[in-house]
Image (cartoon, rainbow, N blue to C red; front, side):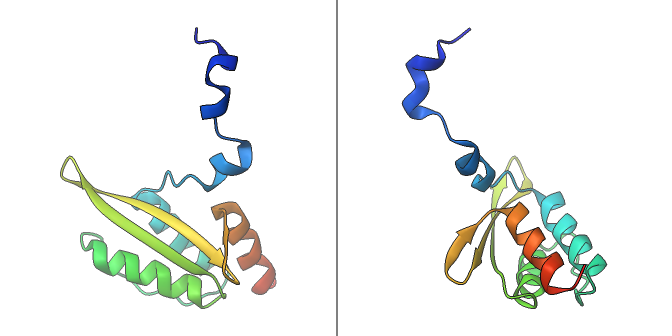
Length: 107
């Protein structure tokens, strides 16, 4: 077992960890499903077209005032997505983005 103190300066705080994008294709589709449930009109991208998925999720978030920056990259021939979220020029976590969307849409 590694000594925690030995790596203390390399460890992320809970707030930093929350902002680490562990995003995947499923995170993007989950965001689209979530926003649909909030009443936001969301397009239906081709599930095999990463550009369509990225632009669709970004457009949907913009409708509630959040800028979403989905970034995809190839990883073992599959698409992996890393999303970051911004509100009024400040980076926010995915959880904060969801809470804000609920508030804005009255849910």
